[in-house]
Length: 283
Image 1 (cartoon, rainbow, N blue to C red):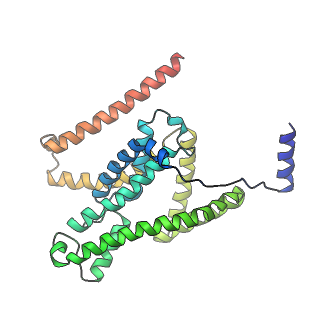
Image 2: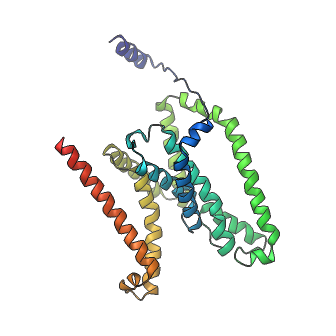
Image 3: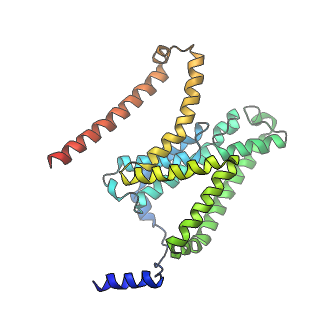
């Protein structure tokens, strides 16, 4: 009871006890203990990287989602579990390197960063694609060397700056929240210069808060939003190519395998959810 009165007194006087923050890097044994999660996230990130239009951000969400899916302790995720951090960051870094494959081989950007690289190449009269290996072979090694030194720089900056950034946690949330909302509103407005985008941002935030309170998966919702637009565009193009005949997809082996795999994944998720709900009601 005395602690409750002390906290109430601190709120009344406006004082704030800053939490103790610290940082410790995982050991090699901890990383080795999550080797399966690392290999899984590498495969997920590589697959996302070679697909044009997905990018590293989506790879991070997919890596995190797969870690939650295959973990036996799903409740621990979202509370600083090391496996979730390793999975998302490994997939993110794997997608960054894999995005160079469609960029250099086909001239197709895999995300915002590679799209910027295409613009820079074109400014220097270089067209990414199959001919770049013949016309400008030195460019390939320059890109590889730049990525290598960029990763070393990120490691060095991360080691130096992480301890400094941790002090942001000492700022009271009632001061930090308005700053976050202000930056989010500026970022929403600056894209197209429309107040409607800011309103949509606040509405999406409220909906996301309610969905999170209801137990929905936020990474799954983000994946649906990002992949929804890509899926609709490619589905419309595919329907034009097959003259709006859906049965054509079932006559192609690769399409049939992907459709069956998607259906089995959906049914497995529904079966698992129904089974868990039945076990909860029986208890």
